[in-house]
Amino acid sequence: MTDADVAIVGYGPVGQSLAILLGRLGWRVVAFDRQPELYPLPRACHLDHEAMRILQAMGIADAVHEAIVPAREYLLLRADLSVLSDLPRGWRTPTGWEASYHFFQPDIEGIFDRAATSTPGVRIRQGVEVRTIESTAQEVVLTVGAPGSPGTETVRATFAIGADGANSFVRRALGIGEEDLGFEATWVVNDVEVHEGRSLPDVPDTGQVLDPAQPRHMAWLGGRHYRWEFMLSPGADPVQAAAPEAVWPTLSRWVDPSTADLLRSAAYTFRSLVADTFRSGRVMLAGDAAHLMPPFMGQGMVSGMRDAATLAWMLDLVLRGSAPVAFLDAYTRSRRPHVLAFIRQSMEVGLLVCETDPVKAAARDRVLAAQIETPPPFQPAVTAFVGDHPLAGTIAVQPRIANRDGRLLDDVLGFRFALLSPAAIDVGADVAAALRRLGAATAVIRPRGSAPSEGDLVEADRRFTDWLAASGADWVLVRPDGYVATAGAGAESLEESLASLWGEIAVAA
Ligand SMILES: Cc1cc2nc3c(=O)[nH]c(=O)nc-3n(C[C@H](O)[C@H](O)[C@H](O)COP(=O)(O)OP(=O)(O)OC[C@H]3O[C@@H](n4cnc5c(N)ncnc54)[C@H](O)[C@@H]3O)c2cc1C
Figure 1 (tube, rainbow, N blue to C red):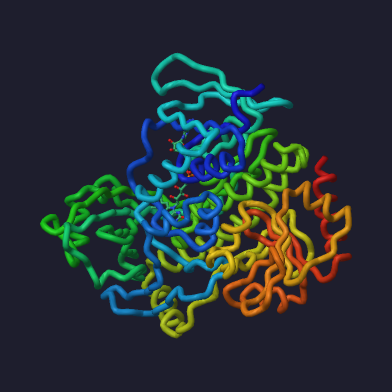
Figure 2 (figure 1 turned 30 degrees about the vertical axis):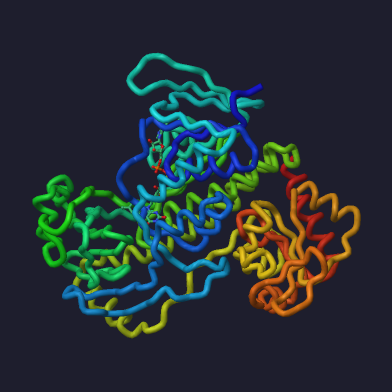
């Protein structure tokens, strides 16, 4: 018997998410981090509605919701801080959450940590680094030890995940290469806490200052926390630029040492990289170990959380014996193209924001000033382990359920496949068996105002009913990570679609 079903290398937000999700599914998890404590300084400050849905699966959406603030305002500003374009993030999301939120990373990582350490079956070993990792046909063998000490210990796990950040040791040890998409810009990131009783109402939720002399960004992160960032010109010394005596003058319009504390200043070189594959044998990569993007859309950690949600259900299928190990290739096929789309989009935003040529910047500003409508949310579809219905791979609508205390659907059904339909479907033995193998829940969801049969769910409005009807489907199979696996009309199409999805697993075998 192995020491753990899954060993996780790295206990940043992505390793934490994986530990919680896999632990809640009942697997024995051990997570290692070479740091003795959580990384104390914020990097991420934005998460989106999809991350909130994953936090539901982690059982901590309500706790995190208490610690974050909606980020509805998105201003593009001129050098003098006058508004060039106001693009509020007011769109209605399929998940039922707000589109965007801001937060102070140590607050939410603390919530993740408490959830992980209190999940039965999850062991967190901080202050322990992973030194070697080898994937054999049956298991993964890791050697671990305290940094700086010669002693080592051998740990055996059925699977392992490298969630060990941008300089991933696991990725290198497995010989997995990376594709560099070529973005590079160095910014100084400053986190500030204003003193008790103070606030800065003229700092927007998000303000991108499109100043070709020095592109900047500012954001209110909730409570007394604010962030200011500025780009460095080529050749500038990042260490000097991030020194407090260089940073304070850039903040003088808003704060000074008598009104605020500078929590930290750090220079980061933003890059765009993606690993060639996210799987080698029994080891998978997740989070920054698998992909890096410039942070202009606030999607790096969120993408890592998407990795965690997808990998958790795929590993669950394999660990339960419902799918072969080779099925885990679907993880790369599901996540890599999706995250590549986010990397490319983040680079596009980054190239707009980081423009330093005054002529090109003026042309950009003319286009942006004319833009009065917020662009639609960027929501690429996933393309693996999905059927061929137009809804397949898109984010499933998550209604609130009126006859379950107004709770969101995933909280009612749990982190599992769900076959949803507006009326009962008469399924045959093959379909029932396929759904059992997937561990799927089935639910009839009626629109508000209708009389439910026993066990039916009634949505608080008509969102789900209208969404499904608009696509011509009368059933939808939703993956645990919130994407539509497939949809269709009639019991026969359900049988065919399930056979085709299981065919994908059989091919892997
Ligand atoms: C300035 C900035 C702003 C950002 N803003 C956003 C944002 O608003 N929204 C967003 O979604 N993302 C944002 N990101 C990206 C986000 O911070 C990262 O994507 C996220 O932190 C990655 O998490 P991770 O768990 O994959 O890796 P990390 O947080 O890097 O964690 C990796 C862990 O692995 C450990 N480790 C490494 N090697 C070993 C080993 N051999 N043995 C044991 N442990 C090991 C490390 O100690 C570390 O704790 C931003 C990034 C930056 C730099």
